[in-house]
Length: 246
Length: 128
Image (cartoon, rainbow over all chains, first blue to last red; front, side):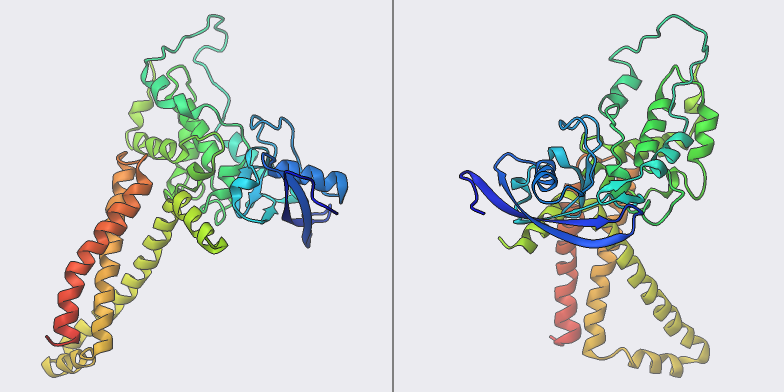
């Protein structure tokens, strides 16, 4: 088939699995894409024009929801924010996110990710749950300054998939959960300090397993400095009295 | 630029932290092997001067001298990268960790290595 003007043909290699998660090998597709098209556009074209059984997830298409995270050329990224042209290769390898169980093709279960997320008690625990007045956090406060760039997590699982420690330890919390714990522990209004610290201090799955590899920071589509959160929290945990809130 | 070169460049730019981690692990293992060899050789002293001299004589060949130079490089990489990790853990150089690895660990490490390796090579291997 002739390639339309202004389009370039790319070879997309997709790791596929049956609906029970068992691998069925790598399937190769040739797709003509315009200059600004993304990996998600490529997958949609394959699904519409070549193989309607190809499974993958997406929702917002603008990098807000984190649903379309997958491994692209070996790096966890959001398919909707990855322009094929910028990958600088004629062949693009697309795989499901590592460290997570595959449901079908590029669809993974985020259940293990959220199991770890739940362990650190992600919800805000105020001192007085019955209080009706809204507490304010000044922009100039230490908490606001330290956490400004760390509140944008979209729970896409890219950091969890890229983490070298996570790939060898199923019990490890993972960067996103630790970042969430950091946000809660540093929040002067939150009171569930002891519970969160006991989870973070666990020998096998706690924060001390982090080897400062920076993979999480490198792949985070929102640019959150996750390793910074982890090292800051490690330092703060050496002096737990720091978390006592009045 | 070849596809391989593009991938190497990308990995270098994006995953310096992981590269540093692997370097630290590999050099650590090599130093552990050296440590066993070192203790084993020193242990010969317990058997007397003759035994110790005989053990040392096995290291007097050019290949071992080259390995000694490689050992110098291993120690430098492991030590400088260890300082880098400590600085990051203490909260210094977090945003500059990539540059810290390539300029400080690799760049400065290479300079120190050359300063030590060249005289070692000239005296031990070439006998100048």
